[in-house]
Image: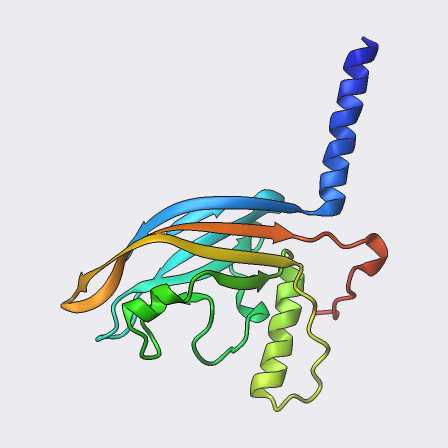
Length: 191
């Protein structure tokens, strides 16, 4: 009986240490043109390659996106990764004049994300203030505690609508969240 209690305590302590230290997870996946991919992560987060439909002549591609299950409409990746008006690490497509070969050459892709929807909203407010309102009255942008690395492991280029495109990807996404010490948590603006 004493051994069983010790084992349970060790499991609980290991779980608490993991929560204080954060987590890292590796997701492997495949996508075809026009199809998406979604993986559930710890802390009720989700990672996705969302299919994009671009205006012709650009063929479809994908956008890296993450969200929290309680607020799936809040993009946790966009406000953490400038530039906000042009080509960006999140876009796996041939927009902005890229060829399929150039899309694949940007490999690996390192990006940041916010593990909390409220922090992502505060960062999005900061972006809107800086980019579209002349930078006035913008609070400091919250620090992103999540990091991701998307590595394209294999791919195929083909034709979509008669235009060269990446028609299939196999990838690895390594996602990590750093935990805040209780006293270091950022104060978010009141909404």
